Length: 111
Image (cartoon, rainbow, N blue to C red):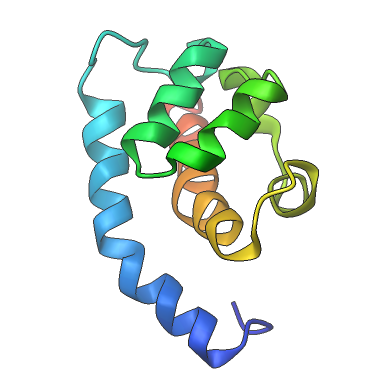
């Protein structure tokens, strides 16, 4: 995060705890969705981001037909530019949702 302006780093840090808690709740409780994000359908991805408070941004995942496998392959650049999202929400989505989902998936599948 060294290249981000100080106010953005503070904003991201401030929201980290809330987002991390949602992530662990979402992937550890079934909620009618597959536990492994790789098995999520497009609607599961959309609902995940709606649950996370990104109602407006969730539609971008639906429009681009991003399912769980696609979500796990997304790079930071894909999220920041490929979905045509505003910078603030895009940073938050990538840093506190996409990246942790990718990390957790890799950890669970490397056992």
